[in-house]
Amino acid sequence: MRSGFVAILGRPNVGKSTLLNAMLSKKISIVSPKAQTTRDSVLGIYSDENHQIVFLDTPGIYFGKEKIDSYMRKEAFSSAKEVDAILYLFDASDNQLERDFKIIDSLRSEAPLFFVLNKIDLIRPEEGEAYKTRLKEKYPERTIIEASLKDNFGLKEIKEAIIPLLSGDSPYYPEDWLTDKNLDFQAKEIIREKMLYFLDKEVPHTSAVKITSFKEIKGALALEALIVVERDSHKGIIIGKGGAMIKKISMASRQEMEKRWHRRVSSLVLKVEVRPGWRSRIADLVDLGYGGSGE
Image (cartoon, rainbow, N blue to C red):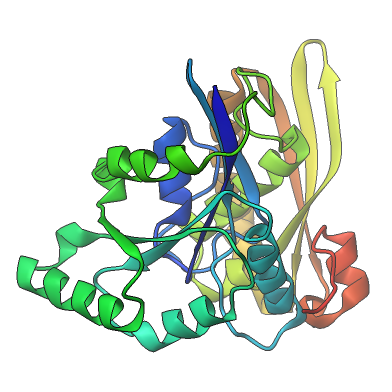
């Protein structure tokens, strides 16, 4: 038995959550085509007869000025400490590598670092070779793994690279565990995912979700959640004409919860509250589960 921890890092929207979900063959991290979907580090546990790999899916690293941006950077960089390996993901279709170089040079970890060139299917072979050449010129000692994670291409090579580095000799978690996140956290993330899907980019990215009630009633789950936004106009968008949008978000969220948990969700009541500037106010960040401390 070999076991250990592997951090997944990279800029927003490079496929970190897609990698985690593909490794586990199960949806653990929420995904959307919009950047900065992941705000917290999410632990996913891959187990087979001979291995247990604990993956840490981290927020996309973005040098924004809001306190929540600082929180997400701290979450990502902290996850890179005391792990057996780090997988740093690149989007092969985005060649603005200076941002990646800034992040990589900011890492403070002794763990072996592997580069995963994701979305390789979106570029021509010669473009991929040019991309790898630029990486090798800057970091000649790094192994580069080509991948198209939405198609599961590259997963075998990633496992083969990290398994020899696992330092543990026994499982860290029961073999039937897939994540350490409780249902409250999963419910909050599912609601955020549906908001990202149904709403314009600015609205979900300036919103947060807090589960205010989670009960089991006659074998079914009943939830209440608060959606916090910064502007009255955003509240109106989320509610929608005649309450149509918030009903759509609630229904889609309930369906996702039932599919993921194999439990009936009898009700999900969503309320919306306006808190101007919540992303830079420590008291609100703490209340909404984002810690609030700086870097």
